[in-house]
Image 1 (cartoon, rainbow over the protein chains, first blue to last red):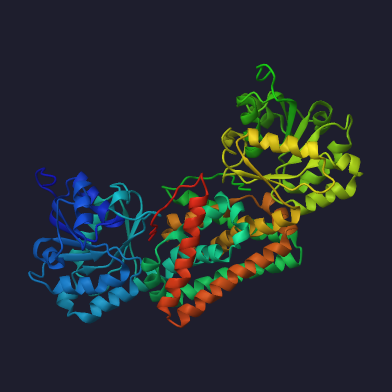
Image 2 (image 1 turned 60 degrees about the vertical axis):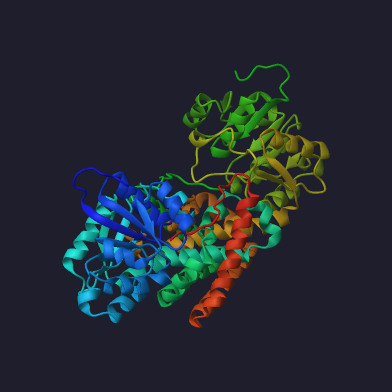
Length: 303
Length: 303
């Protein structure tokens, strides 16, 4: 059994889907002895045993409903297309007590599904969340208790969401080291189209358009710019599709900027290109400075 | 004075522009005692003194022509728009002996300028080169002797180029740990449009199109994808402009892929998006495997 200090903040916390994100939550909870026990829920006994051996969970079960029966807080860290149905099942299961939250990187359709399928008295215990953390790796073997340190976790509660439940989930993420910010599900998805979904699309487009013959000349710049194109299509197809309107707008804006650059190149307008680039560099350097976890390149000159 | 083992491979090697690239060449030469001495040429005594203190050069001069007078090999690691004029000046300076090479990330216009401005008897000692190495940082304080280890250095000699001079520069780069590959200047620039210049343009377009309001939600994926947008506009404006035809073609191909994705999103074609993404992921993973210096993400799932 897990951590056994006196007075953990929570009783049983269940984590559904013990991969990189779920495993990191478990490690952080157990390291700081924040929960009486961490229950892992999944489909694959081998993976769950590995999670237990790595210290991410105290014990495990293959039955989703065990989470509702035993846990005070249930964290869904499963692929986005599974989250709403799991949340609906858990919120209706007796004793109808657990606060249910998720880690999905889209929020609009999940919130609509959950709040649209259930009476308010059940739905109100669902606090939608999205920790902005991750890595190019997946699986509990890459989980780290520090994954959320100084990262942002966005909460997207709606008017019907229970205030005490929101406070519980805010407190959960703060205890994992994250900063918490709340916004509407629509605003979240709109922002993520720009900060995450469009960059993924652009990275994949760069890789797809690279001629075979050019591959030997690929170096660090290309590899960094396209790293996120190695993400799983199973995870990403539902994300892109469910945020398709905002994503199309963001892609159009990126193409608009590329068309401006093409016109400057055609006109051989060196001062224009320099200004276009300089504005990008300034903005990129500001982003680096505002991110406490990023390295801070000062005067970049990748060749 | 620098390294003093018996029988260094070369006499004096001059490095014009002792920044990240030039400084790394100097550190590697001196660490392995490959040159009798390394002479640094630049414009700023403070920077050159720093380079000397950091062990990148044995001594320095502010006079370009000192390189021609004293060196057996002259490496130009200056911004691309300066390279041709410096090479022309050095190749004509007595005793007309040094092999001159460069590190510029475009080759076509440089080769045309040098070989078009000089009689063959002088031009033939110019061996155009481009080490595919770099970092988001610049300046000799970030130089590392290992920068070129297992990296590719592309040589783009022409028919008129002296065979012995080519062998000297091949040998120089191999001694710094790099792999050497030769191709035409045109082929180099065409490939680099895909592997470097278009990714830079796309990264800058992503940063430029990001709405101010979305900035707080920027996380690792966006920062990695746009890291190279922090590169200097002074270095990059001439690079993009001199390779504008190939770059426009590469940008068009990337936009073509983005338009395909947009159509799949509009049609809500989940299997189509999955295939589009899967092909990108496979290609990206192959690239990671073929790059000996890259980390190898196995099953990526950035969220």
